[in-house]
Image (tube, rainbow, N blue to C red; front, side, top):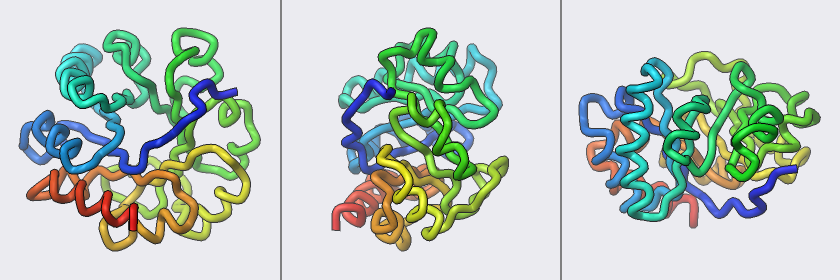
Length: 211
């Protein structure tokens, strides 16, 4: 059973230093919050634990300043050290059931769905939200299995009441269609991290979601 009953987030930024193309990722994060991002995940797949931790500490200063939840991608050490709001894991990471039994009883847990069969397992039951990954194929995440598309998203929506966070090549022109297909929230990387004006990019996306 998931412990966090409310998921009021609509616009979810997944950020890494590399995705910001040489710009200060902390500035990009702050601008995105000012533009309307509701929740941020720090994903540093290739960083050492110490490097990841240092980035997380600096980012959390910003998210705390604005009251924005910070989610750590697949690193229990960093998530514990910074007292993150939650953690996001996939099929090859620590299982949500294991996280719940250990140090994440009262933290938000996100779980990536790559097969329909996952909707029936205990990992989904104990998770707070499901990452539908990817809706459309993307260069920022190449280790995924299923490209869900809008039809797949609609199918998942019919099979679960869990909050759905859609990610994968979502941008201004398809964001509304993704929401209309059943997503509670859209997650983006490049659409904000690579934008010339991250604040404006976030603002435009949030407006599109709320149309």
